Image (cartoon, rainbow, N blue to C red; front, side, top):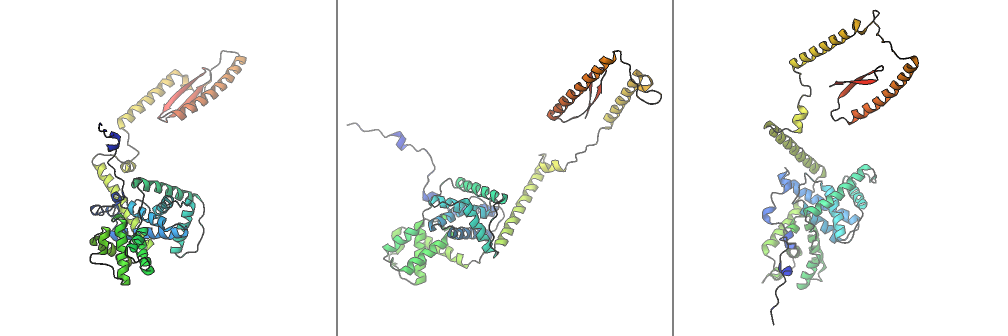
Length: 402
């Protein structure tokens, strides 16, 4: 029996992109410097902005009555996005709205954008301790809604549409069952709380969900003073290293040691970094113009009125004087009678023809004025034209005045 040849369609690699959960994780060498640090923000300000954005997503998800899985997905997408883009160039609140809206769709609990915007407006007023006022559906609301839609598309584009997030909620329960501690409600709840708080940090873009679940169980057991197997270590059966657990535990504990971020101070720092970035761009454009590259600023500052050439002005004056002399030589007395009034020529045709001629000239004058206005509106150079009407010859004379 002849051997079957392998099908080239099944063995061929159609793409080098591998979409797995491990490929979503960010390696340690690419964690720093982030785009926000490159744009002038310090690391503490960036961390405060990440914490504040995740808190907004969590509190708004509670008011929107979303499941905890949807809120966790939104926070992970928020953390991933700002490792590819900067807080200086992308508004944190708008992107938080886009992430919670996208996460609700991913977890099959969609909400209207109007509800998301209203909830964020409500949370913002509560944080500032203001009187709760409903959002007015005006042009500002429409602009904000369009910004949220664009931000949602931008998140999908930057993440390469790889928005699946595996959460360690179920993993914690399974691991506690293996350790025969699933009946200890305090341990389960404490590990669950640590896991929910870890979404405000960057551990979900650095470690696998199984490693985070082991770290949360380890931290909860240490706090409640519950002994777990150590010889061999209980986490070794889940293929997790102790160094990774220690790093995750320290990251979560540092979160509790930080002070609550001030929204106004963070906004002022972001605006200052934005202003410095704009000034640097203007300086770079100015240096480019010094090397002969024209830009908009150099054109705007250049004088519009250029001094004319004196020789050219003299030649123009001579031509005008010569023209006036020619006109005076053609007309006796310069075209004027002794009393200074204009001289009229006698017409050779009869009064009837004269009246008909004047009517034709009046109609002709209207037609010319209409065609002249059309040509002026279509002329690309927009030159100024002046014309004189000569009725006895039935023609138009144009003088072009630049």
